Length: 409
Image 1 (cartoon, rainbow, N blue to C red):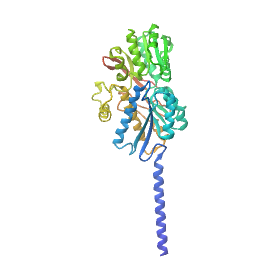
Image 2: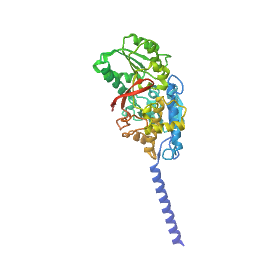
Image 3: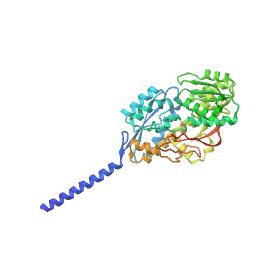
Image 4: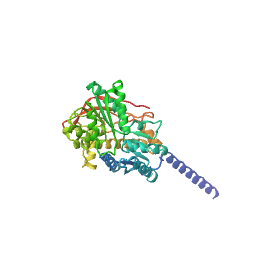
């Protein structure tokens, strides 16, 4: 009897040890930081649902819809996405307040696609001190691709300095003796793109004969445009967000000012900018692109855009497909889902950033052919390629090759 009890005890102990070993193995495979679990991944977001930049609010709505589609398809590795998006009214102070709430009260795993340069600048230091990913910040400011100074921050769209260099190359070919006027938003958007323009012009930077900056709190850009016209410039570079871009296009037409007009890509949206400004006023505008135009029939048979339109049919049928912010939101959300999918069961914040910094030639459905996403531990600029385009009739026409630019820290 005693021998039986001892054998039973040994077998029981062995079973417990094996069970513990199995459990610890499972725990080793699943790593979670706040906001992640076996069932959910909680993601934070800021959008200007009100205020001067509310035209961008559609990005948040599309991202929400995309995550809803992913949840309906079973989630990411079996986990549902909880997307918590707050209005910051494009106000840095409000952005800080809402971000603290998302991190400290809502306990999100990461901040995804917070909109705009001012808000992202305001929350960058806080998130880096906290070790919370600020992933795919919706801005092309160079500071959002600096892994040495800000290892928890990664931008999304092409850096503004690269865009500025591209415009400079074009101006030097098209208007080598031109006189350039620049209207720019007084933040990292405007200053970065202007720096790229000047760097690209090199010793020809003296072609810039007038500069005007504006604040996002101003009601109108009209007076700035009038002063720039008075400078005698025959090239106009408009580094503006949608409200001010539409005002500038309309005001230049009212004054019969017809320079070589270059519009920064952040406000190249037909739906949010060009139509409000008047199609007739926008003829000949030049801008840059990295995304396909959802309203362009040339992409009718493109597999990626077929998936995009099927998504909109099911989850956002009433949106304006001519608004390139819709394409933007879809592509950014698709890329985040890919990062989280590759992260697997290690949903620690550090691993999410490691995966985001190891994308090689990844192409969301919406990027132009030849343009891909590539990152590295020393390269936090996911997209560094552009094509030029010209507005003709009621649509943008691409011209020229894919132009590469690189800003590696």
